[in-house]
Image (tube, rainbow, N blue to C red):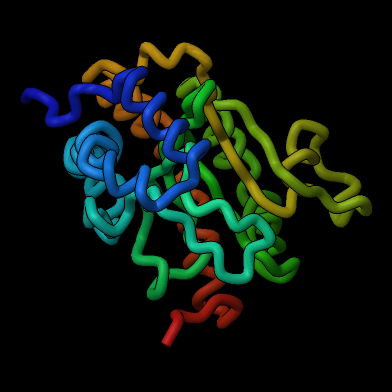
Length: 236
């Protein structure tokens, strides 16, 4: 089946950056349709192209192309930076946020100099991430296979914050980075923006997301435990 997504051109990215540089409503209004057709529409097409695989991975995925693509216009309320427009854009492939807060998700994002995609779990309380740590200790072989699946998908592991004190000092050495992590990210990053300008990007992402499926299954099971224990509650 032919992909809807045909690519995002260097010219479209340059215009997005110029819009961010000018930070001007008149400039944005003048180029709004160009930005929409060059950036927003291709990202929505990406969602459509990825949907079959993502629904197969998780039937509860929320994949409204309008809702899951970031907006060019930034919300500056409560933000120190008053810059109105973005030069980076993203897509989150996940369950509906209000019904499943903090659920793990696949993503795609790009900046003026790079693009990337991967699998993330962000949760903001120690009690929540401890559920994931407990699952790792309960099922170390399964988790190790999931980590290998991410490596096979071309993903590297990263976390933005770690605990200083080990809760599981006797855990296998290869598991300790994950048991100290306050959040989890498996990512791929590329500085060749020409690769974004091709429908082949969809096939590349589908393959990577599918290979990394064991980790998504592990993380979503941890999230479901968190919700079952009342640590995470749907937003009213």
